[in-house]
Amino acid sequence: MFSSRTNWHLAPNALTRVLKDVRSSGHEILDLTISNPTEAGISPDPELVLSALVNPDSTRYDPQPRGLLSARQAVCRYYHDAHRVFNLDPNRLILTTSTSEAYSYVFRLLSNPGDEILVPKPSYPLFEFLADLADVKLVPYPLIYDHGWLIDFDSLYKSASPRARAVIVVHPNNPTGNFASAPETAALNAFCRDYNTALIVDEVFLDYAHDGEPRPSFAANTDALTFTLSGISKISALPQMKFAWVATSGPGEIVHEACARLEVIADTFLSMNAPIQLAAPAFLDLRRQIQPILLDRLRANLAELDAQLKPHPACARLQVEGGWYVILRVPALESDEDLAIRLLRHAHVSVHPGHFYDFPTEGHLVLSLITEPEIFRQGIARLLDFMRTQT
Ligand SMILES: Cc1ncc(COP(=O)(O)O)c(C=O)c1O
Image (cartoon, rainbow, N blue to C red; front, side, top):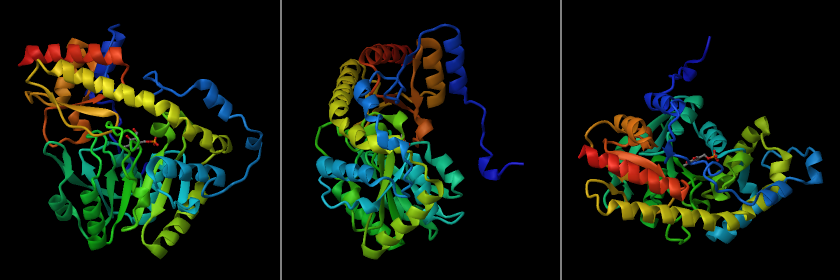
């Protein structure tokens, strides 16, 4: 009855089952995995959010495949003001309801069934489902950790076959928090030239460099065909508003052709709604209010973690440059999933095991840095107390 691409294993995994059990037995869990800002007590001023939605123009239907011009111009202003991308033409933007939708448009644009997309490992688990739905095969290329995360270009070249259509770069990566450096960007462009592939760059966390130094956006990259994806779910901490985009850049004619084809894909769905597009300029401006609050929280939680780790040499955190996560290195005495389950059962602390993100070895736990500070402080204390009993 069903397509083989939807033959997913739908039963909840062991960790989810234990989480449900522990919750239903009435224990309060300190959740260090929350990455939804609306659940972490961080949201822009509700009055400003709601008033942006009240616009009489919302009663008109003006179907624009690329999205309303006023909304696309607001995205161009964001790149201009936040990342010094001065020449982004709104015609090179296609609006989508989410970054995930933007991925699926770009996969459809670039790939035939069975084609390959190169993805960083470790990284974000959503790609597998997006790839299944687009009938493409994901081929991992490793990031290596050496006082910070780096792209392993030797392995990238070895992983690429003639069916490779694109390389995904998450800038900064989720959950490792590394940005693509200038030399890595140059090497990625060279790879794309060698293999005639495109770059798909996910910049949802671009504004969250922990040192406060703005990092360059790939929206200005013209050395390879580049699709830069982002949206307000992270930029303005408004995931519920479903406003994202894909910006296309690259050498000459091919950009024009890519945008024209993407426009047909977007026109087929016309998934954007009027109220959100009309509110987009105000929503994007709300980043100025919310990002300083978020950055303070990321830094405060990181400092708290470092302070608690000092007397605990068996555990360490990995270097992180940006984004909303941090990785804790713990003794690999069992699988990360077993450890996460035992932490839930015995310490009532919820963390993500590294294997959710395809870490190559055991001994990694992923924590959300947007967790409310008091929960973070208590959760880390309980986690480290528990680890002390293990080592
Ligand atoms: C790296 C990365 N890309 C994309 C997304 C999804 O963003 P959106 O809400 O725009 O689909 C997430 C969500 O956490 C993410 O971590």
